[in-house]
Amino acid sequence: MPRDLESEKATLEGMPPLSKEPDARSPLDSDPLPLYRIPTSFVEDRFKRMKDLHPYALLLNRDDIEESDWLEHACFEPHEAASREKVGYYSLNVAILRILRSVCNQSYVLRLGFLEYRLAVCGELCSGLFSSAYATTDGKLGELVRTRQFPSLDSKDSDRRKVLLGHVIATKHAAFPVTDDAMDYPKDWRTNYQLTPSIGHNEDGETICLHSLCVHPDFQRKGLGGVLLRGWSQRIKDSGIGKRIALICRERLISWYEKAGFKLVGESKCQYGGGGWFDMVMEFDDVPSGDMEF
Image (cartoon, rainbow, N blue to C red; front, side, top):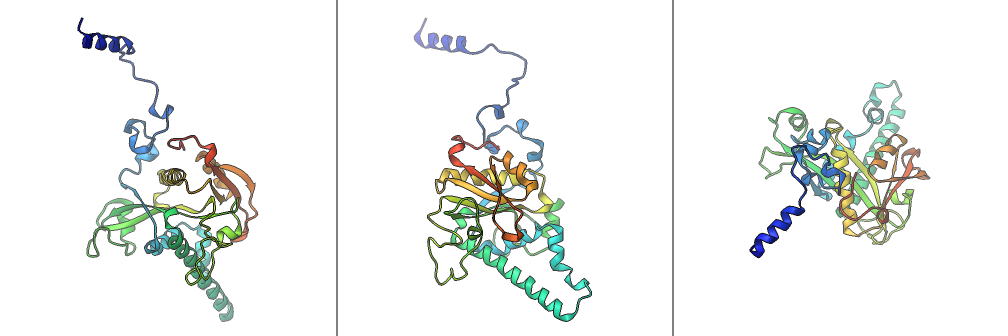
């Protein structure tokens, strides 16, 4: 028998017998795969619900500050948003109203300061999940585009709008877990920028502090948050710029982050926003090589 036929015969004999029964083993049971490589039939229903959004990820920078600020306001809990918008409905005297307005303005300026600082000095650590649509687009995406002036996607004159669905905002810091100093930022960073300040982003830090992970309320429960966190965490790990990701979260979100690969450290000493946080961490040494399985 010719040598090439002998080789083919040996190959065929080594293959498992053919069967009409479907393979019970899912690709998800073996090595974890990124979503774009998983056959559609095995993708969870919650991920299929995002197919009409056609989301894509981009790094954020200072040009995205207005959209990131809009998104964070949209993701506030109802009672927090109401405390800003409904001040005028209370029967308070003028002096108290002035004080409250001053506090609200200071809070708004402080929030903008945080965003501008982080997007300017460490935008490579920040990711946005975007989509695009026209005002005539059907569904919630089109409805959202009609509510405000989103930036144009293709050119300044284009009617196709770029919509920020979710984002991750982060910095690096030398401390672990997340501290109040890591949450803060130097107010003179524009005129006196330092690579390794005692507060805020520290270029020599080995802890990536995840400060904000949010998805617009209209598009939650579609798996976008998990996809955003998974892609961002994988990118941070592969880049080799830190040894871990640390964050603080409310008690109700502990189990969600645990499913994403984070471990609960305990109650946080961080008093940002009044305290009541819990420390969580993902140590890269504990994560197997390859794609993370969330």
